[in-house]
Length: 193
Image: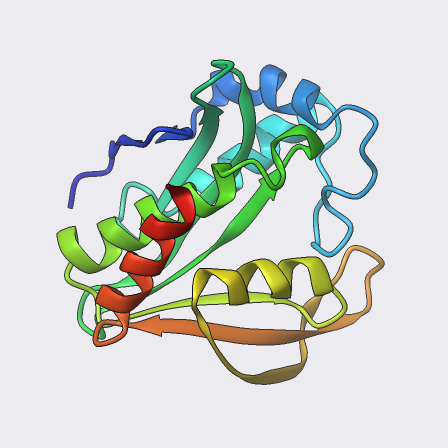
């Protein structure tokens, strides 16, 4: 598997996440306290972002993770990150996550196109059968965004992972499977036109 995948669209370029992205990504967050509200980590400084990037890149050499910086095609600035991780070639599955966008990039086409690029890579290049997306049950904005992608809500995982406050979070699981992919792809392409 190619570990240095570059995915390019009209609105966003997904480039391999590197330590040298830390300063610009930390700056992209700015004073937005909402970026990491529903996660279990909140990198705010360049040093914290370096550690966060290292954690996202941890499984890259094994081929189990593809972590990306999201670069806004219109401005050339980094506006967030996303990953295709827990790649399992035997089961033909993966998860999209570790996704965050700076406030200025939300509702701009960046997230929709980033997911289109990731799903296209997953289903067409990697020949996966299933891609899941998981979000905190309290994160209604994320749930609406995932539903707009055309993913199917599968269920709820109670006390699934730690949250930022140190408690246990309940998560909502969505997926797209290979048989659904052509319809999901067409709908995403139509939304981006």
